[in-house]
Structure formats: C-alpha cells, structure tokens
Amino acid sequence: MLTEYVLSDADFTAISSLINEAAGITLQPSKKTLVYSRLVKRLRATGVDNFTSYRKLLEHDRAELTHMVEALTTNTTSFYREPHHFQHLEGYLRTQILPAARAGAPVRIWSAACSSGEEPYSTALTVLSAFASVPAADVKILATDINTSIVEKAKRGIYSAAAAERVPLSALKSHFDPVNDQPEPAFSIGKRVRELVHFRTLNLQGAWPMKNAFDVIFCRNVMIYFSQETQSQLWQRFANVLKPGGILYIGHSERVAGPATALLQNIGPTTYLRQTGGRS
Ligand SMILES: C[S@@+](CC[C@H](N)C(=O)[O-])C[C@H]1O[C@@H](n2cnc3c(N)ncnc32)[C@H](O)[C@@H]1O
Image (cartoon, rainbow, N blue to C red; front, side, top):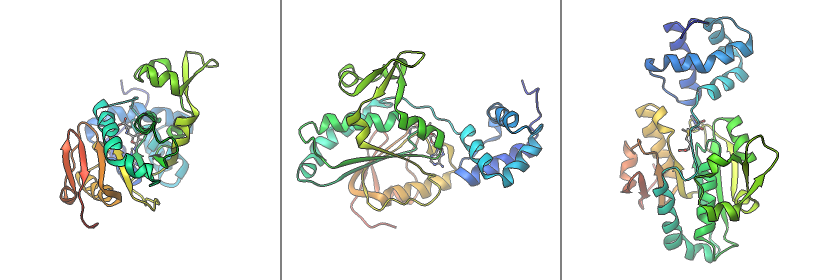
C-alpha cells in the first residue's frame, strides 16, 4: 500500500500539527494511511518527491496549506441527512417562529460546516414548506465551510440524480430543475431555494463576523474532528450566537459538553434548546 512515498512518523506529526493549527482538526496516528492517500496527489501536484519536503513547503506556502486542509477534510453529506432534524425544524418553525415571521421579524439560520450544500438547501426546502403561508418572510440561511472549493460546488447547486433521490418527490418537482448538459442525469437547485441561502468560506476556529444572533444553527458532523477542548469552546460560542429559545442541531455521534451545557438544554436526539441566560 504505502509504496510510492514514505510517510515517516515525524512527517505525520508535523502535518498533524499544521492542520490542527489551521483548522482545529486532530489527527490520531490511526489516520496515517488516510493522510498518505489524501496527500499523495498534492505531492504530485507540487512536484516535491517526499513528505519531508512537502511539510517544509507547507510551512511557508499559504496556498498549499489551503490545498492540504481541503485534501484532509471529509465532506460526506446528503440531502435531509438525519431526517428527524428537518421534521423537528418544520414543527419548530410553524409553531414557534411563524407568528413573529408573519409580523416581519427576521429569521436567521446558520449551517456551520455546510459542505457541498445539501444541508442548507434541505433547510431552505423545510423553510419554504413551513412558511408557505408567508412567502415574503424575511429568512436568510447562512451556509459556511472552511473549504472554498466545496463552497463553490455548493453555490453551483447541481446534484446527481442519485443525490437528489433523498429529496421528497413533491419538493424535487417544485424546487429543482433538470439539467441536461451533465454526463449523468442531474438536478439544479431552483431560484426560490437559492435566494434563501448565502454561502461564505469560514473557518470555525477563527473570528465569526456575523453581527446578529441566530434562531437555528446546524453544526453537524464536524466537531468529531476537533479536540475536546476545542469542542467545548465552540459549543460555548454557538450558545452565545443563538437567540434564547433558539435551536442547535448537532451530529449523530456528537454531544454538547463543557460550560455550554448550562445554556443548551438537550430536548431530543442531538437537538438542543438555547436557554434564557447570559452570554459568557
Ligand atoms: C462531514 S462534513 C459535514 C457536512 C454537514 N454538516 C453534514 O452533517 O452533512 C464536515 C465539513 O466540515 C468542514 N470543516 C472541517 N473543519 C472545519 C473548520 N475548522 N471550520 C469550518 N468547517 C470545517 C469540512 O470542510 C466539511 O465540509
């Protein structure tokens, strides 16, 4: 398997600490084979002939550091992943948010670590369904990810027929357009859905420039890559940017921990309610 190049423990450790600094991602030694297979193409692309030269290149080449982060992040996602979140969201929007939205209150949702867009677009479809009676509601879905290439893909909003299979037929008919210029059958996200979603590149480890608090945050299947300490800090930051009464959805194998547990009450599977209370 590991034949073309040698990834020594020292090079693996150096690369691990660079990605930890850049993206907060913790790489266990068990990930060595994965790191090798993901980075081999970067060695070929940059023309360096061993991992030691590659990690030295990373120390001063910011663009390559970005390529390295993109190569090592996992972008697995799907439409309506963990469907119970979207069922909960639909009920929450209808019962808790609709009256205020009808009266003109802004509704703000954040898909943090949105990958190729299936999560925020599923959210937009849920909003359109829940707010069918308030077509002019002021709703914005912010969708962010550290990986600029995946954000560009998300913005294009074109998905294979296989990916779109998870979308209910009625939503597919109303909010997707068939695309004929792709090698395989595909669908493009329709205008009404696109208008709700605003994509940005954002590293969760850095500053968050958003000024207003959110009604709902999705932060799913990214915390698993971070250390316990980083997770604990991020849960607190999410609690701080959620409106009291707002909802946080997290990944199926994740759990809110640390001081944020005082502010985020677990109200269902991987679903948390922001309690009334101060920011810290
Ligand atoms: C497995 S995907 C999860 C996508 C979606 N939330 C879901 O659950 O289907 C993890 C995403 O986290 C992003 N990511 C990793 N580290 C990040 C960081 N420090 N800041 C923002 N996004 C990050 C990756 O680029 C990737 O798109």
